Image (cartoon, rainbow, N blue to C red; front, side, top):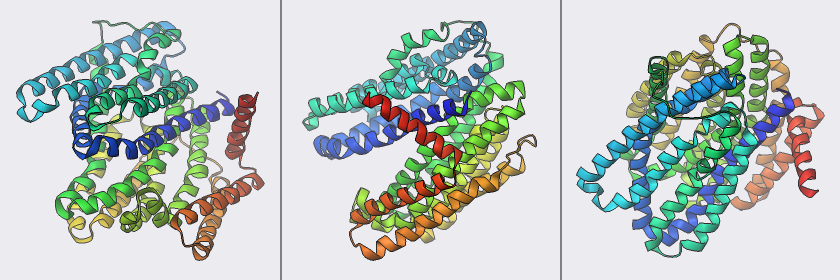
Length: 484
């Protein structure tokens, strides 16, 4: 795989991630006003139930399937065999999940008024399973994934504005939301035939697959505890207002984290392939490339959040949320640790099959996070929640470096860091100057972002940063092709 191909795949996956973030931001103001509080609450409640059921259906299949299919993707017969076994396991776990859901809907009285809504929302689980989108990721078809996903989100947005006009339309909104999130999976049932033949089989080789799938599920489940414990404890101890403030900070934190982390899905497949062959020369090249991407594009985001945290929050959520600015700044440090610890986990340990080690680190981080939250949140509230997140990410980062495979050797780290560091210092200086000249939060945000972008681009071009120039070249080519 050429660097240009990796960069192109990263660009497409980043676009997909950005649209995944932008879509709910665009739809939220309209939907919350049209459906009104009660019906919007029903939608969120129904989604919460479906999310729990989807955990049963998905288990740890997606990450496992990407890794295992990547190892055999050069042999179509073996790929068909492995992919069919994993799909068949996923079909059975989906059946179990729906069985649990039916029992709940029949016997749980609090769910009586939500039965039809939950049934509509739960079709998302079926579509995700049948779509088996993990095969496209394993085969590195990121252009198709991005174009297809963006198309269905735009289609859903149009349908939303046409058909959602009054509070009683909440069931229609639920159906359109399914189209937005997983409608593309229906197309995939036909499209994936270009890679291999997928079929249901009773010869699933459960002895081989299930232990590893359950191990990854345990890892994902422990991560969900770690991610959600701060909000839960904050709500119980400090109340709804601080949860609202902190959730705003976390949403902005997750937007940046999700966008930069898009590189992991691009290289995970190729890394799994090279780890299976123990080709450390290619492994180190890909790891260096992905780390360079994280540093070049992640560091300016962190600097930007640190310097105009308050202005961004006010611009996005309003003056009432200004008190969340300190927690967002603290989460900026968490981002720095999260980028690198995520690189160690998603691009080193998971592709190399070190699932149990990832589980141990995740369980440790979850335990530390919960204990620190219980101790510190009653005293310092949402800022303590942000601090415990940052500290836990740091612990995970340190442990990850201690146990890293000794064959992983990244050269040129000094050269990789210097230009982004210079660019970051300039971003902070520009932010301070703009804040002293302008009063409006909206204007500060836009002016700072514009001049920081121009400055950072200048630094990257002058320093001849390879990955930045590669992405600039690809964007320029895409733009020229669109004009033609």
